[in-house]
Image (cartoon, one colour):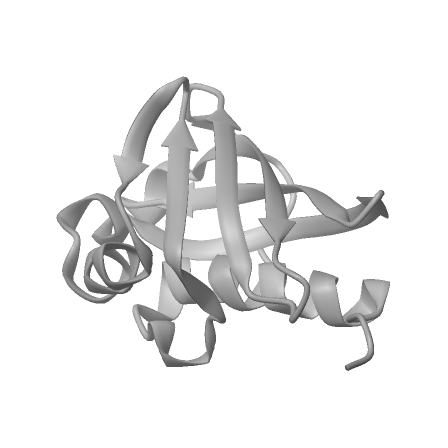
Length: 127
C-alpha cells in the first residue's frame, strides 16, 4: 500500500473543515479511534462521536462560512489555519482557528488538535 500524499492528507483535513459548515461528515475519513482535543480538552471520543457532532452538534450550527483556509504538511501532520465566520452574519464575527491533523498509514484522521481565538469583527470575506 502506498502512503497518502501530502495533497491527500490536506484534502482529508479540508473535508473535516468543510463539514463544520455543511454538517455532512460523510466524506471525512475518520479512523474509528480518532480523538479531538480542543483548547486542551477532549471533545471527541471516537470517529462515530465526531461524525454525530458534526452532523447534529449545536456548537457547529453557529458557523456559517469558513474563510482563508491554508494548510501545510510536516512529517505527515497537517497544520491548518482558517477563520470560522459565525452567526449572526450582520456582525461579521469570525475567529481564527488552528488545527493539526494526525493520520494513520492509510490517510484516516487519528487525532485533531484545535485552538481558536475569540470571535472578533473580521474584514475579509469568507471563501
